Length: 104
Image (cartoon, rainbow, N blue to C red; front, side, top):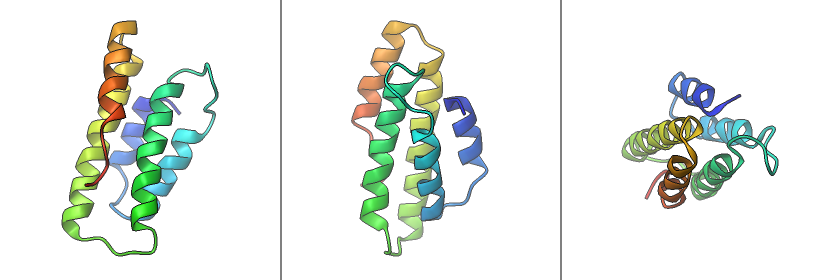
């Protein structure tokens, strides 16, 4: 599943923690050094791991759910754009993604 497909998949999901766990699995699937979008996927996995670890077994507010959804959509949009960019565009996207979080 390419990053554009990940974005479309996420848009159809609810705001529950299970969605983020499933997205993490999809990002990690078929990821290997040298694979297309491997670096972008690794950054997404790291961000998802942090969010999942923080909220696993804990309820989160509707504010956190909304913020997490908005931030994840932005990250996936950036990842999808990076996959279609030239080398300089990919590096710039990686720099931006490296400092994004799903929730504060």
